[in-house]
Structure formats: structure tokens, C-alpha cells
Image (cartoon, rainbow, N blue to C red; front, side, top):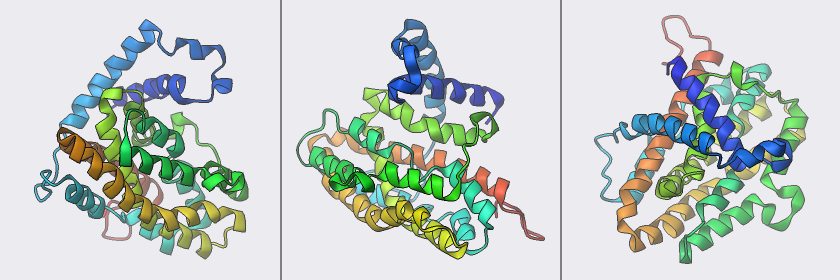
Length: 292
């Protein structure tokens, strides 16, 4: 991506904070959320980005006529990128920590994203997203809330905060992507697909991160965040497809291709981020490129 893309994502991240960040952190700036000037800038940046996303094409072997099968096929194509296998087998402790600081877990603020995605849904789909959200909330145990588990991880490993200016452009795009979906009601079908893809892919990836933490002798408090995702996300992915997407498509069949489109967008944004992080962290072997 060019510098213009980087400026765009930095701008959008600041705007999305007005919609989604804690109010106490924003202060009086939160009053600018629907400022005409801010809204105009948001729309301008998003139109450029959406044009790029809408140009993405599904792989030829994926048939969108069956959205559930298409989602499964998309999830399977890059379920275990090379960098996760490298983390599990080879990465040093410093490299593992650097990766975790960039990755931020399967996805940041997933609980808020699920809450936003369920607005206006009904029946089985709304119930499934409520079940998913309650799991994010530790099923009522404050100590088991997923964000609390992540805070324990951060403290246990001394996870640094990498300033946005020092992150690759693809990391900014990945951080902004769910803000794009969560702040535009008309993109709710795409959001349903994107979050579903996250759930479908997170489990096996988290298992490899756990292997890395265990191999490097990480402290005990570093483990629960990835342990719970490795355990519950495979079920979450299956249930998201069968109990949220399937009944939604039965009621609104025109949503099917758009749900798959959202999964494709998430897949592409995340793949570019992981490719850039691989280039950053993995030293190429003799006769082999870093991206191989």
C-alpha cells in the first residue's frame, strides 16, 4: 500500500475512536463523532478503501451460491499461515513478544464488535451472537472476561505498545477494518461474515501461539487468554455458521453473497498483515525468500 493508504488508515483510526473508544479516553473530543466535517472525511476515506475491497475476487474454486460452504472454504485456505508455524517451532522469546504486540490477540475488542453486529438481528441469529458475547464476558465471571485475560497476558510478558507510526501499513488497515464495518449499518452483512471468519480461523492459530508460549517458558498468566480461544473458538466458528449465518440467509437470502464478501475482505486484510509481519520477523533461509 502507498503512503496515501497509510494516511487514510491513520485518519480512519482516529475517527473510529470517536465511535468506539472509551469516552473517558476521548474526553470532549467525543462530541465530534457526528461533526459534518468529520463525517465528510470519514466517507471520503472509506469510499477509497471500499473501492479497493470491492475489487477483490473470490478464488475461482469457491462457489458463493452456498454461502456456508464458501465460508468454510475461505477459512480453510489460509487457516494456518506460515508465521504461526514458525512461532510454534522456531521464534525466540523476543520475536514471540513482538508478534503478540502487533497481533493483539485474535482480534481487538471482539466483544464490542459482536454487540454491534447483533443490532437489528432477531431470532436464532441474535441468540447466537448473545451466546458468543456472553462467552466473551467470561460467562458471568469477571476474572474470565476475555479482555481481562488479555490484560493479564500483557502484564505477564511485559507486552509493549507499539506506536501506530511504527507499525506497518497493513497493521493499520487490519486495526481499522472492523471499525469500517461497525460504524456503517449498511455493511452489517459483511460484518457478519468477517466476524464469522475470525471465529473459524482463531482456534488453530491460538493453539500454535500456545505452543510458542510453552516452548519459550512463558509465565503462567500468559496462557489463559490463548487457552480459552484455542478451546472455544472452533465451537464458536461452527455455531456462528449454523446458528447465526444460516438462519439469517434463510430469512434474507440476498445477504448470502455479501456475508461471503465480508469474509473475503477480512481474509485479504489479515493475509497482507501476516505477510508483512512475516517479512519483518522471519529471517529468510539461504536460497529462500522471507515470504516463502
